[in-house]
Length: 278
Image (tube, rainbow, N blue to C red; front, side):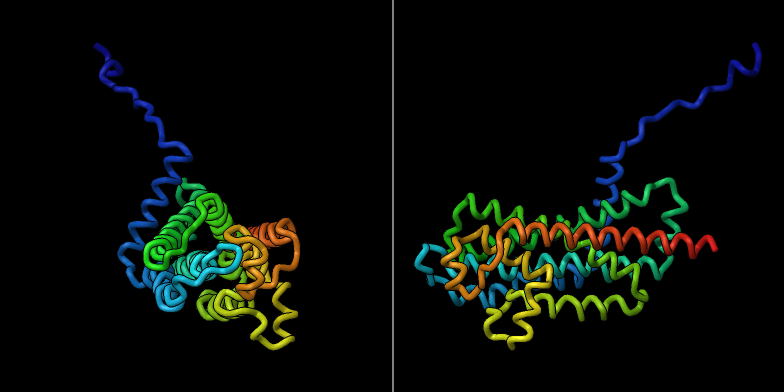
């Protein structure tokens, strides 16, 4: 008997496929953040706590169109939480992993980098769902929000769209700023965006120059898109939100901003690759 008869041919094993690889990456990201409770508290739990402190005291107040004030405040704090999640998950965290050399090591593996970024985006969506669900549950039970199911479903869709569109802003900052400065820059960007978009109080309480600046911000249009989904225009106006512009204009600005930041992220990623090859 020849020796070749004893040689076993290697068997081919089917890989998990793109969806399976992405699911594994998301699971790894979730497990990693479970070991970092301060991140979950700061990004996921904080908007729920703020809503409990400043939103629930308005329980029982209803606008003439039938919308409860709590339902509109649910949108305000959910928008705040969405933008916070998108910027910090894709901004500060991505910059930290770049500084540690983790992305360089990943590029040396067979895993496509698209899976890495897709996992980050999926993780942002997971945390966004948790934040939205937490605020909505609190608003419905303790705040008697009286959500209309169709409007609530549309609003949740708008909020998740915001996660997808604002996450590239964080990654663009992470690639075009120095890693050690990204956390500071993200905070400097995030807080003005939240205040100037009316998430915490009506824009009419701001100086005129800031009121004129607000419509140029993507978060301004994001907020109006979300408020428009949860309530009729008259109630939104009584709530203190100026309802200027078509919903399609607001949608176009939010999506366009996401595309621009995606291009900036791709350019920053390519610049980093060229530096490593030099």
